[in-house]
Every structure is written in structure tokens, then in C-alpha cells.
Length: 251
Image (cartoon, rainbow, N blue to C red; front, side, top):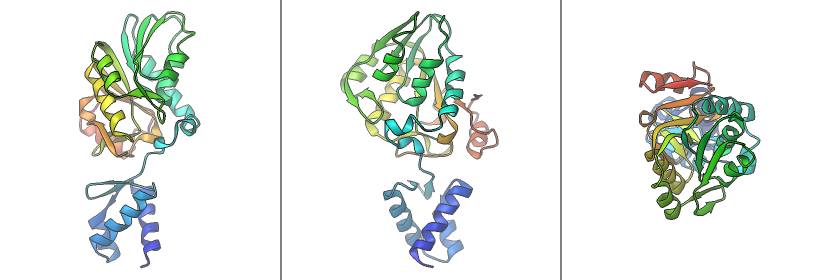
């Protein structure tokens, strides 16, 4: 079998099974494990899969640039945003992450809600300028343009002065084994810092992110309060998370 044919099989298996186990596929195709691992390295370098121990997972579409992500899965993000906004009670202090789903949460807040929103996203803060009764605090620092959020030591230091009721966490991938992932190491660290400052953390997981992975782990699924998602309840990742006793809030 030619290398191009093997890679077509790998991509087909990712689409149908949601994962590739290198040793199983090598046995099925009658090739060496090293050959499959080399194919996976090349596919990962081309942005077509996310390598994990023992194989690969589908790459998250949410690693695209910010402008592109504003056009992806808009209705899905709006459903998740409405469900997440309903978790906020009057008087709450909420850490609201950056990203396009968090931006949808800002738009979904009831106009009569009285709460405090703390965010490291200038776009989220700007979206709340016209809200009549939400106080907004912005965490400063160096702007990470890919996600339009601030990151780094200054942002983390400011975050550590906050004690919040909720953190609404945005990620690019949700998987029972790879965990809650994102595409940048510094951004992942910032998200962990924010999660440590809240009594409860809820994951904003629109359907296109479920069953996918990105390079950097934010948290394991068991470390959050719940995952808010509109993914099909029959999705293998949703079922696996439920078996692991991770709470799923259906959006």
C-alpha cells in the first residue's frame, strides 16, 4: 500500500471512529507500527490530526484564527451560551473566558441581570459595555491575538486577586482521554489560573469541539463542575464522560 493510500485510510478512520490506534491499524494494514506513526506525524504537521499517546484524534476546528472562528458553528455556540448564561444568578461574580462562545454568553445575558463579570477578553468586555446592570472588570496583560485575550504574568497576577462564584471556561477540544485542551501553552496556563479562582467551573463545549483534541491540556474533565454542550447525547465522548461521572448539561 502506498503512503498516500495509508493516509487516506487513516483520515477515513478518524472520520468514522473518531480516533486511530496505531498498533491496531498497523496490524489491519499489514505494515509496521513505525510506518503508521510516521504517517501520523506527517498528518499532524499538516494540521489534519492531533497525535496522542498510541495514535491520533481529530483535530479541533476551533484552532483556526479568531475571525474564522466567529463564523464556525454559530447556532451551536448560541445554544451553549444560553445554557451557560442561565447558570449565572443575581449577585454572582463570574470569570468569563475569551473566545467566540464566551462572546455569545455576553450577548445571552438577560438585560435585567445584576452581576459582576471579570474577563481577560477585550471583545467580551466591549460586548458588555451596553449592558445596563453588569459591572465589568478587565484583566490586563499582553494580548494573545489568536484568541483576543490577555495572557502572561501580569494577567495571572491580577486574576489571583479575584474570588468568583463561576468560571465559564472556553476550550478548543473535549475528549475523555485527552481532556480539555487548547492550542497554546500560555493560554492553557491562564485558563488553569482562572479555574483556580472560582468555586465552580463550567466548560463551554459546542458540538464541533466534542471528541477532538488540541496540543495543550487545560484540565482533566473530572476537575470541572460540568460540561455544557449541545453535542448529541449518543456521541461516544459524551457517553464516556457520563460513565466517568462527569456532569453534562444539555444545551
